[in-house]
Length: 203
Image (cartoon, rainbow, N blue to C red; front, side, top):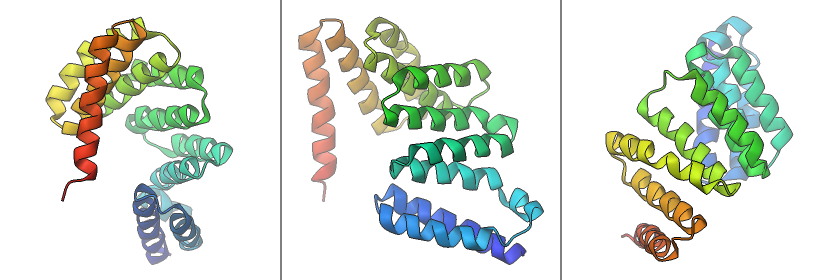
């Protein structure tokens, strides 16, 4: 039973890698095979290997497959199984599902819940604050979204990832455009487009 659990978990990770690579059909097939092996393991073995993580990755797959009710169900199951320190990350994933559904108000509510829990590392704090600000901007609350930019600048500087800086530039431009600062916004959007153009044509 332990080996079945190991095989199932490995296949879940493979399915997730295919999801990230946008190979959704194959990811779905891999995940179904993973579940067959995974469910052969005892509940104790599944809990030891990380049952909450399997449900968390299932949520991401169902979200990208646009099977939103199933994604939310998997997310809730993941939260029920996860240790307390993983709950903020679980809430971010839940908010992203709502964002994909077009329910930005619900996404904001969930992200505020994650924000209130605190105790996050810089990467998770970035995910909470960035997604919250982006959803606020989507709702037209540009002033509130812009108020988060200084904190996001500090987090991006601490994390030191180029993509975070680009996403921050895009969000800043989005807020500037919403607040009527069109010329400054255009420059920010142009920088973001240039980054992705260069990444697309690199090599």
